[in-house]
Amino acid sequence: MDNGKLIYVDNNATTKVDPKVFEAMKPFLTEYYGNPSSIYSFGGIVSKYIDKARKQVADFLGALPEEVVFTSCGTESDSTAIYSALSICSNKNKIVTSKVEHPAVLNLCNYLSERGYNIVEIPVDKNGCIDVQRIDEAIDNNTALVSVMWANNEIGNIYPVNEIAKAAHAKGAMFHTDGVQAAGKIPIDLSKTEIDMLSMSGHKIHAPKGVGALYIRKGLRFNPFLIGGHQENGRRAGTENNAGIVALGRACELAEQNMDYELTEVKKMRDYLESEITEKIPKIKINGDCSNRVPNTTNVSFEGIEGESILLILDKMANIAASSGSACTTGSLKPSHVLTAIGLKDIMLHSTLRISLSRFNTMEEIDKVVETLVYAVKKLRDISPFWKG
Ligand SMILES: Cc1ncc(COP(=O)(O)O)c(C=O)c1O
Image 1 (cartoon, rainbow, N blue to C red):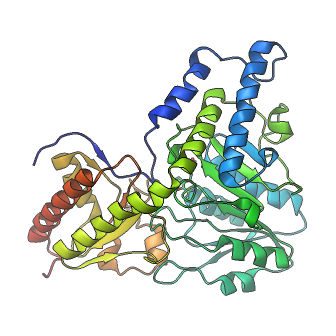
Image 2: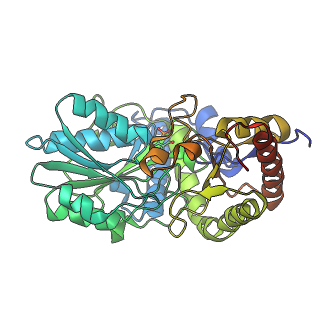
Image 3: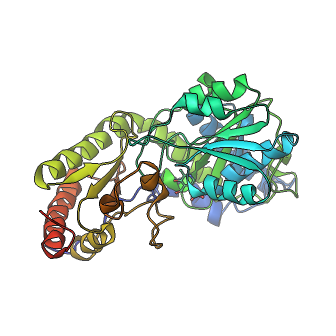
């Protein structure tokens, strides 16, 4: 096997900047570097492009331009939504969330719990599914916010966020969803939902790192997280990231144009990958809700061997970049909180790989991933003391 061109199949961690996105943002790094708040026309030009990007993001989300606030990343959007709800509903101190949220939500909730907030994390079943009734039962008069992600970054499950939003509203709570992994992978039309706030991130949809957005439903009471200048209509202080914002707008436009491709061709590649490895490698388990997942993600456990060792072979032998869990938990030896939440057996907990595709992958690459995986798993099982065959 050769160690050729990079095969990047870790698109839930981050994505390649689409060359069309790069083309759109380039002039805002070199030519149009003005401060959009300046009153001379050199600043005004930039502000017009920021307005255009806001409309592109809004159209992509089925929202109004004034409902979109630009941020620096998904994490900032999540923090902003959570802090805003708590400060608006200062007479309430409860947040209802799930056990499978990204650390951007869960670690903030842990931090808040240490400071006296009542955080309720709703468990999931063995397929990672959430029972809306359990969420409903947890919401009470003291609940400021319900925050449940739209799609899970590790197993790809899609959650019934509109149903949950309705349950939250019925009891007077706000509803936020972390849409970072849903955006660009499944259609989103917020005008048809009761969602109050939605977070998204540029670098997951082929825009660069350092830009994100928060949707805030028109009329929703809101308090800013970053306080300072009057940028973003007083909702997010800090000089705008001109190039990043223009890139996010263009990336949203392209994501919309590529949605059918994502739902058919990217899904075809993911399904082909799963059927090939299921046929060629014994004792594997596909994790998550196979009937309701984003089209690009597969999370697979290979009994008897360590995910990290498989990753190493994929990397060293074939220059394949995948993940053994979410990017944020990689590097620590703690098992993934999502895989723990679905009750994966110990023998499978450390033997898991996440492969996440994008529109830039090809069938040839998938064949190479399958071939290398078959080789790696056999090789590792041959020397594993945990593999009973
Ligand atoms: C579901 C989810 N939420 C939030 C984030 C954080 O986004 P960012 O890296 O833009 O801060 C990520 C990143 O992996 C994610 O997958």
